[in-house]
Length: 95
Image (cartoon, rainbow, N blue to C red; front, side):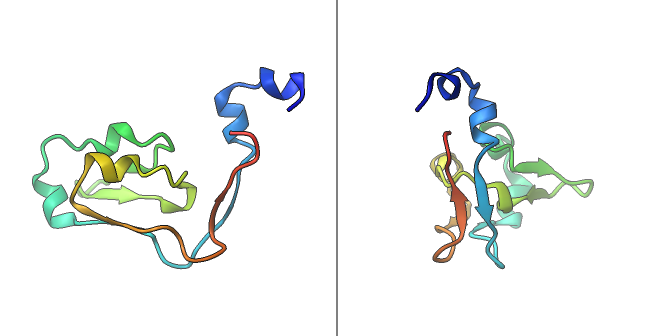
């Protein structure tokens, strides 16, 4: 890693990542359980900021930018999480 690369912020390094998007989501929230969840940790804990609250109050997940860190799986037992299908997902460059 060069000195210039070391000086990049975490956000800039993560911005260099590339993604091969799978056809199907590898993370599936259980919307019935999400509806009664008071904590909604997924909205605050995901480093990729992939979870949001839809206009209808349901959890919206944009799996395409997933960093595959598993943080959401650690804080929420109400979702199905698998690695993306072979060859798909994040390709780290510097982050």
